[in-house]
Length: 412
Ligand SMILES: Cc1cc2nc3c(=O)[nH]c(=O)nc-3n(C[C@H](O)[C@H](O)[C@H](O)COP(=O)(O)OP(=O)(O)OC[C@H]3O[C@@H](n4cnc5c(N)ncnc54)[C@H](O)[C@@H]3O)c2cc1C
Image (cartoon, rainbow, N blue to C red; front, top):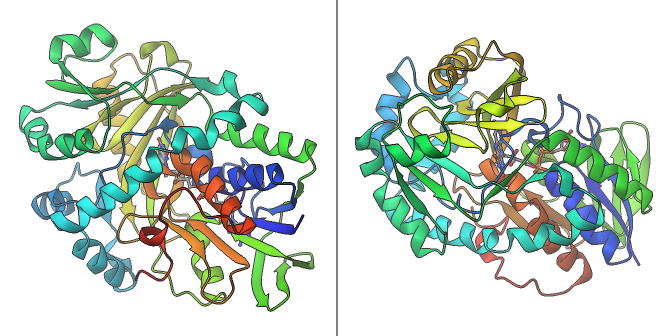
């Protein structure tokens, strides 16, 4: 049994804690904001989809076609805050380099290897921690308001199918029959039968943390400020304590970059900022997560109402919200679902994204005792469980069931 510290209490850190406890380790988890707090990680406010179909990275060849329009259009769901351009440029250039057909297919293939194991990463955790009531077994629906956008998506649809994703293409009439609350705007839809969603992602991580504490995990609400790998262990400095561990797992989402640098890896981790709004009391309007492809957001019927979540903003890790993107979410979601009232509780979160769209899963260059698990971009809820299983393998010295070289911290 080893003493293991986990930094970060989102889907990835908590799943790591679960798998580590299962191996009999003594686990201590640090979270800067408090697990499940709305000002903490992306795990609180995401769209809630268990999206095993989401193997197509944002950086795919369509970026070259769509980027000029995205950057210029007033109703674009993708924004760059120009004053941040100098600090964003290196990341953006690498992101574009990874948008070629060849590289994007390699990313999709590597993501599909993780996504194919996503469910087994969570199945026991959900049952044992009693989280099944938060799991809604309804397939996600992706919609296209224009036929041109649907036609343009055919190459990525074919790639998904080739990589084993189950899909069902729907006509406008079939979309309306499935979700009668939607306005008659949608020309085509794609249903992903193997997907499902969470009715409250924040409650999922909060309840999981409580259950893990009941099983012996120590939980500290404080930020880790320094990781010092030593030959015989790893010393962590946190806000209120300094402590030594046999292993450390870095699962701090979009905030992992500086801590990874202390362990010998200059990882080009960026943040894709995303927003959500809550339309309280309106959950009966739809029965499943509904994504609007051209507008870049999902509407998910959660416990307290429809959560509208999405958009991508590149502007670093500041907490200032962009009213234009929130207006866009409000306007577009009300067009799609005319029964929605007025939204509340605007939320901003940071998707942790590497320029090639793949997470970092592996041991630090400065010490095999430090294991990285961050950079899960738009699908960290989905990939939390499998990432945790991989973390536990690395800590135990077992060979993971898949080749980890695509996710290496040294790939850049
Ligand atoms: C709008 C939006 C919609 C999304 N929709 C989906 C979806 O439908 N499906 C899906 O699979 N994914 C979705 N995602 C992505 C998903 O939410 C993230 O990929 C995922 O939450 C990342 O999990 P994580 O555990 O790596 O990081 P986080 O959830 O960000 O957690 C990191 C934790 O680390 C803590 N931390 C940071 N620094 C420190 C430190 N120094 N010391 C201690 N603790 C620290 C933070 O407090 C935080 O709690 C969405 C994201 C956004 C923004």
